[in-house]
Length: 293
Image (cartoon, helix red, strand yellow):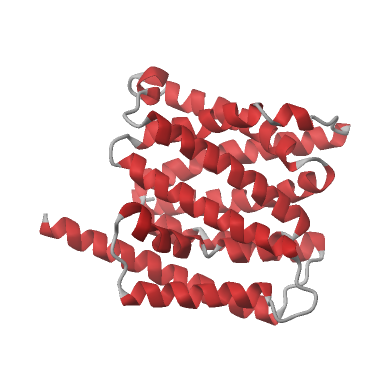
C-alpha cells in the first residue's frame, strides 16, 4: 500500500469515526447539558494531545512554545465554543440538518478571508459562496411556517468554525502545526473547565459507556486525521470530509428516524458542490502563488 493510499484510508477512517462521534454526541447532548458533555470530551482530548506532543521532537515544552500566545489561546477557546454549539444543535435541530449546514464552512472561510486575512476572492469564488448560501437557505427553508429559531444554531456553529479555520491560518504563519494542535486541546480544555463544572450532572451507569466511547472516538479520530495530513495534501483531506455529511445524514435517519426532505437534499448538494469548487479553487491559486515565488 502506497503512502497516499494509506493517507486516504486514514482520512476515510477519521471521518467515519467522527460521524459515529456525532451520533453519540446527539445521544448524550439530549440527556445531559452539552457543556458538561463537551468538558468531559475535552479532558480526554487534552490527555491525548499531551501524549502525542510528548512523543514529538522537543516534547511538550517545544510544542507549547509559540510566537502568538494570545492567538493560539483564542483558537482553542473558539473551537470549544463551536463544539458546544454543535452538540446543542445535534440535540435540538438534528444530525442531518446540522451537518448539511456545517458543509458550508469552506464558503464562510472564503468570505471571512477577505476582511480578516486580506486575501482576494475573485468572482468565481464569490459566485460559489452565493450558490452555497442559497443552498443553506434551501436547507432551513425559511418560507415554511414551521421555521424554528434553533436552525440558527448550525449556522452559528459553521460560522464560528470558519473563524477557527481563519485563526488557524494566521497562527500557521509563525507556529508549527504541532504547536497549534497543542493549544487546540489544552487551551480549550482549560477554558471549558471554568464553566463546565457548574453544569456537572450525574451520569447513568450505561451512559458512562457512551461517554467513554465519545472520548475514544475523539482521540482516535484526531490521531487518524493527523496521520492523514502527514501523507495526503490538505485539499484531498478536506474534500473527503464531505463523506462525513453523507454518513451522518444516513445515521440520523436510521438511528433517530430523522426526516430528510427534498429541499434538504437539493440544498446540501448545492452547498457541497460549492464547497468542492471553493476548496479546489483555493488550492489552485495557492499552487500558482508558489510557482511564482
